[in-house]
Length: 392
Image (tube, rainbow, N blue to C red; front, side, top):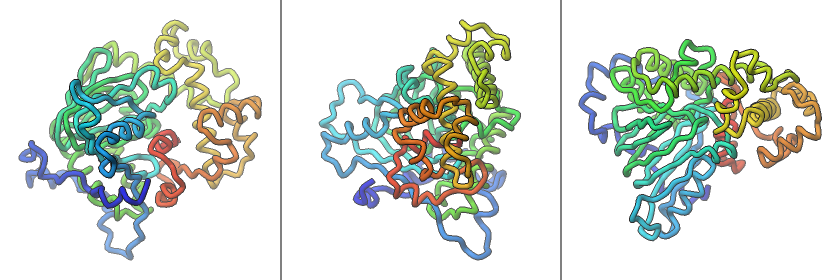
């Protein structure tokens, strides 16, 4: 990002007191129920150097007529955005997007005028990330629809949405804090299969999660490398607590599909190296028909496309792990590719650079050593690349 943007962006998009429901969110009694952040953040021992540098994007320095097109282009890999009916690009679209990479989790601060958004089946085919997107609106309202079920977001609520399933919606002028977490982060938790897509949680535990995220957001610029794994794990644990304590659910048919999709994901991830990882194998292992399997993954470009995508992502993680000394051909074989040439072509098509070039892209494992994000930003990585490489 150009340096000129940095002076236009604020480290906090909105103060906590801007929440319309603040009387319930920041009462003294609730504030003490959960620590504002991991104890390590308050450690009085020898200070460590801050490690995070945000990936910043703003349209405010552009001519008003160019602002919306720039915003569309920036978010295009994730969603398609449109202006409300009757609003033209010439009226301007002043917006800010600040992303922080904590290794196994992305935190995004966003400030944008009213717009609509769409993650279509076509978009899923070209960008098959399936992370969980957790959204907290500071101001404004949003309405998101999945399979006819509409989720309304607003201050004091926590939204859960899967990027692996089509959705569409609209939002008023809003300021928000988002957290992107890979599904694998919940694989060893009791709620791994219970996270409901396109739902809104409210109540005591979600309010405590919001308050915790407030505290983390305020400290992002000062976090040291040793803090990041604990921040990620604590955030994951608090989300698990919110989900476990919630009695809310969405439509049963949608949830049945999501639960089955999660079983498929787990089986695929656990058998990437198998040469027998085929649709027939999946059907036998999970006790479902080929028709059911194909319908399930049609929005993602098909089950074979999904399997190859997971193999490539796993290979990318191994290649970008500085501790991994395997040869490229060994990594390709370990994730199920029998042809080095096929692997190289598929990898380059997926990521836009070769397996050899991927050796210079550092992607940290869960709760382990985290790369210096300042270097990650300086190497010209985009928000799209951060999302694609998250958590593998």
